[in-house]
Length: 436
Image (tube, rainbow, N blue to C red; front, side):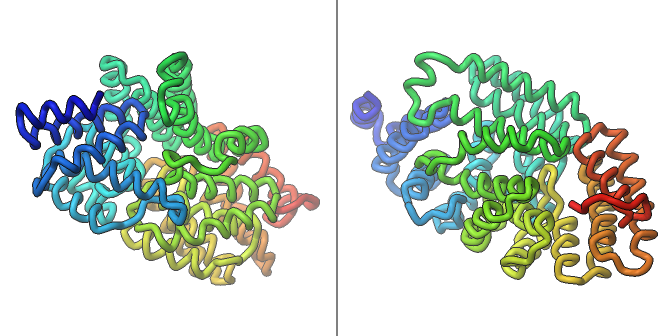
């Protein structure tokens, strides 16, 4: 039907009108979660576009680029830098776009700025303000407005995604009750996706929203630091199969999450296997790729939890060049903290101490209270692991500060970890206990 409609439009109104029609169709299909339908519309539309290089071309070309990458078995599980993306970037940076367009471009990864400063200067898209610039407080109202707008328009899948992002912002700020409320709002909307809507989608809406909600819940788990076994079982059900074409670009992020969770649970072999799978995405993906800070910081976190140095040079180089230098910021991750971890693992303790201090300054400025508390705990843990003369005295005030913050915010798993470290004697407390 779409092919016939485009053909009729071209006959009566010209090729340009047919291209515009198919671009609108592609965006509508993408917004409904039917990516394969969007790809079909884009392929048809490019046959009518001619030499035009405008927003219609961008809508069609980006869907076609996404299709090619998704169907490429050598794709490393992330979006890649391509000449087409650069050409599209040149066009879209000159255009004022509605929020729905900006989110589409953000998800497929080329409308990000070259640095945090660039994002703040040029973009209004809440996704990149959150996942590139770390503007959690600023994004609260933006996401809440998008939820309401999308519900009014009947765009339930989009509303669920916005609710999940709102939960992430609240969680990063330490407002855990508000995060749970936003998450529950998205989950309640997801429960409405039943029947024919789901059954007719090539990428079922249910699968898409599960992925979005799982990402939000992952960050909520980091703050709570408990229930990891249950989360891992659910994540394996969701991500543990081979990626489909539509979900392929999300899988590097899933591997990164799995590596960190496995390390936290003491499953070193599984964690190192997943860490090895992350090397190609870390090296091949551009810095602005969707979730790149998640990949790099979780790789560092995996080594920190395992007290290992496997692939550490590759991880640190990419972390410093692609995330630290442009100062990209991401919920429940901080590059400075990750560099502190890697420095300590390589015995560069003075450098690690400086990076812990820089992380405190940045996180205080963001209002990122849970991660700020973790900085104090991790620096105390560094001294406890090293065990040099005077280290228990260095660790104790940091551990006390971390424990106070964990208790104030309500971070039960971290409270238990801090209390165990205190009882171990390595931080100037009682003896008997294990370091983790």
